[in-house]
Length: 339
Ligand code: ASP
Image 1: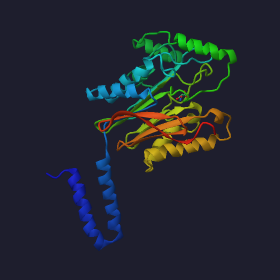
Image 2: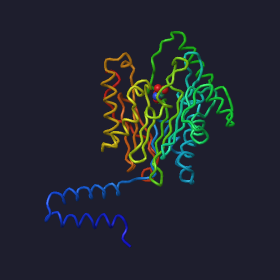
Image 3: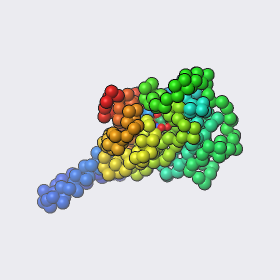
Image 4: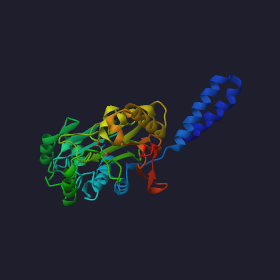
């Protein structure tokens, strides 16, 4: 029985022979078939990619769960719990830097291949906001719950309320209070939002994002991370993208949704991340945020190809696949920090 690859091969050879007789139309058809052959060959799955150094342990856990037969969303949740629970990761979950009032406020979202989404924003006192976002997806008719309502929902789902401000973060906050100057320090210590994108064994895309947001933000500030289309977006026909960096800039430009749209138009993950980063630069080069502006994107397409790109140097992401295991890669960038 001839399989799909044989069929494509035969079609390609057949078209080659016919093209000399029927000219350009057949040549064009042949190019399309070759493209399809390439696409079939290149598809790599599963692949998991995550932002920053804390993506490495998160990927490892997600990978383990995926290989044990867990669903994509369950595996993402398991991986994201690692940095959420780690007090040394100062920009996610427990131990995250507080806002200027000393409150740790959390944002998270999750999305599956059927475009189901769940999100929480401005959630306090719950260590695993991504798990709450997942319950929003699974158990409510809504996409997004916020603040007190999100907390109420989390408690009704059996989550435990706890103090997320560690003594270390409290100490840093008190030090910050001495000057009280708001200047986000994104990507100075590789400690930012974790966004994870996945293509599973079935070739389906999914993703998640969880953060305590910008340190010393105003009480009530919500960044890009829980906003579907800004901090995370995917279209199972095309690809997935996620952001890290100054959320305000990512929201202003619908960052992740735009990266996916460019991939739909035929751009590679690298070209798409780069073009949207350039767009953000062009829209912000005379903006007051430019002094400390950093944004970074990761993207993964339906063939399992991935990339990361940032405005300024220092962004990296973790990749896990069968071929090379779990490792870090430095993202390409537009400019250095001194510009
Ligand atoms: N994007 C996050 C926010 O603005 C922060 C980050 O990724 O560094 O809340």
